[in-house]
Image (cartoon, rainbow, N blue to C red; front, side, top):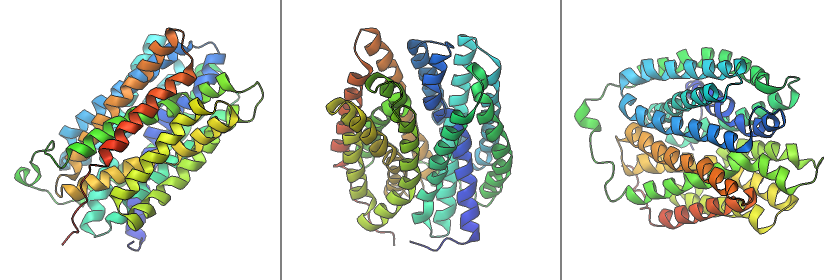
Length: 388
């Protein structure tokens, strides 16, 4: 793996902090908050699932919007703006109990999140590729793991209830966004302007299809535990069990370790073989609460899903760029759009499933089936040719 010098570190830090703001604090903080907000009576489980659905719909729309922003102007202006807007929307949730307004805020939060989650890592990947340091790109996702730990801490220590539970999260998100927005803009200015002809091409050609189809299943597979594992723990564990709160901490710790782990695994095994191992472990993690309900199943799900889902993202993005040099930004946006689209199904399916009288635990079998689909398609992904 190439040496990480000061310039590399600053580039990785800029994108990592952006992911802390939009994806950890702006989005995933909702997961440990959900059982607390349910206890506060802010909304019920069905309404909570609908709020998650609106957020995931926004994420899909944001990723699609990023397809049109994957150009020098979009990176210089649109990316920093989306980051700052996302932090502002997180703060806005402090001031309302209205379920319709919350739905609108979660939708807008998802749109800005989708833009940043696509463009910030893709920008750094392109920047590193110009310096022959692509293998460092997965370290961007350390920000998400660290951010999940941060939001878990903020959720745990807050003395407030109801919408005010968002306040410490927002007070962290705003200064981080103000810090890293200009850093990302400077990185975008260092990319060369490419003529449109150099970045056009077919994204749905044959060599891309297995990777795209696998990623479609991955989105649905991981989103159930990343949204509902704390609520599932309340269904399976007795009152006062340490994993009622601790499941999120174990998920976040595994996520923090996973970026470096899967970055190295891709370097040692090759990104394709590492991705196959990743999907197999993630499938096992989602299935464990169904196969072994109770503390063991909850703990295994937290560790295996928390320790793999970021690896899916970074390995898939690198494989996509290796298979399609020059299409990195557009293909990253397409992949995240598919990921976001299948994520959107997760809370909707859970809402209908539990509304029909089924348990939350049994809904995790849907996620396991989606990851089996992903594993079978990943097996068909071509091995990238070595770069000359």
